[in-house]
Length: 115
Length: 110
Image (cartoon, each protein chain N blue to C red):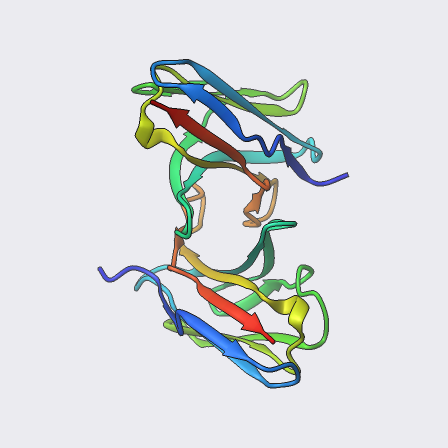
């Protein structure tokens, strides 16, 4: 299995631009998670989906952030408009959760720099 | 108060030393606990689950103290390759919400 695939690996953009991060979870996994990691705040859970349905988006910082999961094999995290404080590493992770919680598998992350 | 708290370190220890980290959590209804390891500029990876009775995997021992709401990780006979950031993860009961601590940095010195 290829694992969780994220794109792009690096994104440099200017303040005010729209940014779209993409994630392909591991085939067969039923849950997908978006995290943001910074030195100051560590790994923060932004939103997670179960069976393509958003379950908890309480970690999404503002209305500028939105996430979708149109099918079981694809998810996007969009920031519009982007701001310098959004600069961070964004990780996507997937898991097969059920009666017994399973481990999270992370993608390699997207390093976002907003100038 | 943060939901999951860890001492950020760094813990600098010589090779062969034993080192222990703690992680406290605020939600007493938390049901599942894990330790993840993250190398510099890489994604986190599962190190081990933490069971109520405690568990061991080679040089690594994880324990849970529900009364005091903390989990611990003990590393014996530290290796240079153990240098990394160790993240604890807590999942509140009734959710699939994996909540990470900010991590504890370990540096094993030759």
